[in-house]
Length: 158
Length: 158
Image (tube, rainbow over all chains, first blue to last red; front, side):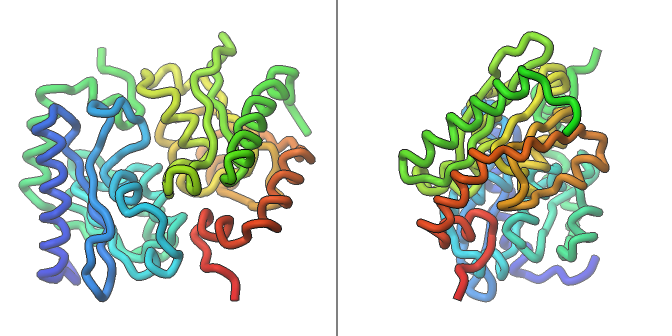
């Protein structure tokens, strides 16, 4: 694992906190945080809102972007996106739209997102292989498999 | 131009109506609509909300998805996304996430989105080259160039 700093561990902690908050609300436990560099200011944070707000577009990363509100292009271009789970194509696209140069991912075992697309566009991708993120998703998927499948655009299993 | 049906023209009309609504509110005039097939039910429609709601994630297409709310995977897989402007990477990613098989685009002269990525993943992309869509964007960009640049993640021009 390369280039993981203590600040990255703090960033993922904030994303995990959001994931836990979502779980405690009965929601999908995926969280995100957008953190500025070099100031380390938390620009925004949030979590999946599929169940809480019936939203198909508020994932961890997009919820963090929405929480941050309107930002100038330059702010995104010096920020890091933290997410507890490998970004789906929508969240990947949002990262590419705003040219966020770095993404720190809790884990990609539960779901492998568009990490190759991110890398192919020059985004630095760091995967932490974090056990807490994995455990939280495992527990949720055992409890509510259909909500999870819906979140990744897959039909409920037969 | 291939495979444009009267129903497509009706779909884009709904998206243009949303774009006009946004313009009348002082917002970015881009609209979207998600329409089921074969029922032709309008599942959702919406417009860019950057200015109205300070939202960096509610574009025409994502606003239409949000308006539609939670849908089963199969519904998306038989729907068409209508958008007045070529989809940015975020909206492209949302279309890919939900495996929407067809996208009808008003125009791509103002902004060329990720049409190649859509096609490379098997999505049918139809571009209408609609003058009304172009005129609306031209007027808005002349009036508020900085808001437009912000919406596509670009710095305000010097």
